[in-house]
Amino acid sequence: MNLEVYNVKSEEEDAKYLLSYINDVLIPSSKEFFSLLDDNNVLLHHAFSFNAILAHAIDYMVFIAKKVSDVKRKDFISNFDQRYGVDGCAHINNKFRLLDAINNSFKHVELEQKRYSDLIEMYGDLTFHSLAPIEGKIFFKSSSYKFDYSRVVMRPIAVIFNCGLKTIDDVDDFINGRICGSTGYGYFDYDYEPHDAIDRMIDACNPECMDCGESGDDCDCPNFIYGNDRGDFSSNIDPSFEFGDVMSDISGTREWSK
Image (cartoon, rainbow, N blue to C red):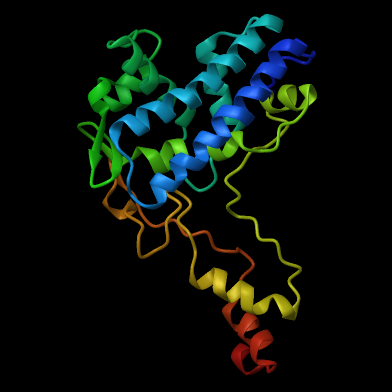
């Protein structure tokens, strides 16, 4: 299925605005937010402020796309979730739509039921109280969902936007899914030579969770609730990692592979 929204150039002024917004506002605010996130010092106003910053970037992409196509806002954001599915997370793959809904529930007090009917059916009523602070973390909470909203939703979306957009063509490519912003999970910068063995072993022994970005000792995902499923530690492991082979490269012998 072709998910491209348009195949012409966006207006230069609009593209430059989006580039300026991402580079001058979104990325600097991401750095500050991630610093709070790493230290578990996120307060509710931090979360709603950063959520709004991310949501405005989505709003402006919709604005650009609607000038050169007949795409509807709801369809655009749904397709953007498909174009930029987040590595690792099998539980929340409607991140951009959920972020948009949370932002609008905060701005407008009450959501437009028809626009978000599928999300309301899944999560229940989405309101200002859908986000709750717990010991420096911001949780999304409903009758059948509970997870760290900052880490599972906002963190990967912020990383996706930070993908080195520089030109008008980059903007069009990004909106249409031809530049694949990514959290980087599943990719390892190795030559897979013996001299990489120690680095490969270190990474294998200290993986991050692909859902929340935390290490195994700090990951809280097993306590998360996603409808009928519970979260778990989804480790970022090199699929080609073989313990015996790597140890053999480290030790210089073949004993480990016997």
